[in-house]
Length: 371
Image (cartoon, rainbow, N blue to C red; front, side):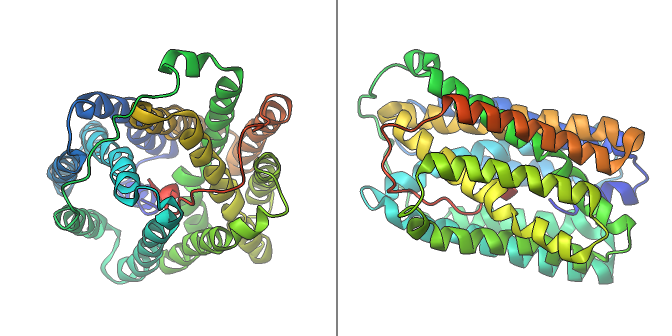
């Protein structure tokens, strides 16, 4: 995905059009997880749904190999990502059900998502430097096909957790702290819109090669992995509330650096290292929040809602804002807007999110920043 923007730019599309494509991908995260959570709610083996979603992702993405107009690219992106985004939240449930009471091992599994991402963006950038961006769809299609193959080796006997939830979904959604958290989630993911949509393009425009772009993306994920390895120790000294507040504060710093110091390599490395907190630490708190608040048969719905509001509504709005303003006011002010959204998130977190009933024992979830 870090090379999608560059691929579209190589086809001659401008920032506003690229923003639309990313918005169509993010927009499916609003509806896909919820629809598939409803479909799978009465089924006993979610892994079958995961395999079907993976296969349909490959089928629809294969149309990207054809000569397409902007409209057909948007349609293909929408259909592909509808099934891809459905797959992700479903597989979260499969993984947690498989682990049972050993949820502390979750991070050891999801760690491979980050390793895979690093290999893909670093190796993919090196390959694209040689064969050209026009072959980006082929590389992506191969990786998607391997996902389908891998899903066949996951045990198919994991059962959906159908134990009775503590409270109805409606009562959970009326909770002030839940409302506040989802507002924060929306704002933080919207602030990431310029980064996911245009960071690669910005680097390419100031002279970075695809290999160098891949290495910088990898740096952010490496920093994220290191943070997760140290997080349990960190939580011996900091509460989850403090982790949330610090992560949002450093997110503000990160976007301001990217806006005004993009040409400074030292500052750029610092900004990428801060991915560990702007996504990693924040997402850790989010997973903890959903796991504690949405119990029993609300687990699938909670995961779907988390993906829909954050990566869906927030990501889509962030991509649209970035695409519209990129050419009008420049990347400096677009990232400043992103910092402003994070300031609002910090205020809401400070005022209304307290985590009174949470312990500091965590489920570590690595690798979802590249959904």
